[in-house]
Amino acid sequence: MSTASPHPLMPDSLFRRVVVPVANRWDAESTTAALAPYVSAAGGTVIAVHVYDDSELSAEERAAEEGEEFPDAIFEQVVSGLEGTGVDVETELLSGENVARAVIDAAHDHDASAIVFTPRGGSRWIKLLTGDVTTALVAESDVPVLALPDADDPDVDSNSDSHAE
Image 1 (cartoon, rainbow, N blue to C red):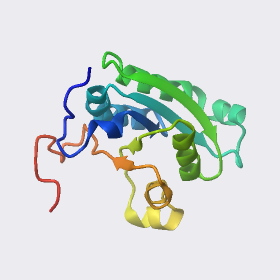
Image 2: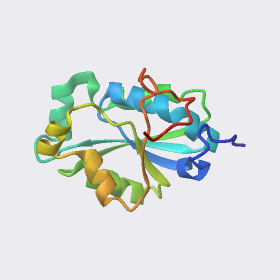
Image 3: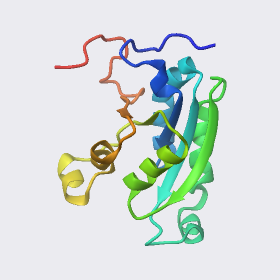
Image 4: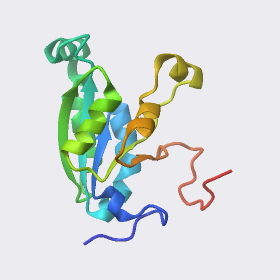
């Protein structure tokens, strides 16, 4: 049985079955901390996905290059971050040159109710010059995309009702 969403403007139905792209262990930790109360309240499922660019390295080459980071430690962080919440967790390693497209395709394949993540840092200029997965997800996805504030960010007051300035 689910309880009310921790945020009155986010219906539980958005968190029924979410695809969660994770880039590394720290991203997985941040995202699961922010996501846990919502998906737990909804009695939902998390499908954690990690996308690697197959045009540069094979999965085996990337695993050798990144060591423990790829992908087991990333997925292990998601599982441990949601442990005890009653949330079902699935994981999937994806490959593709276009990270946003791979995430959107995974959302379709898994009948996701939303794609959920916490944005990673980086200047707006770097994102503008290098391309930004966040921007591509929002612009190209026909599945709802939710960017949650980092639960560990001291500038975010999770109890505040003020969300726009």
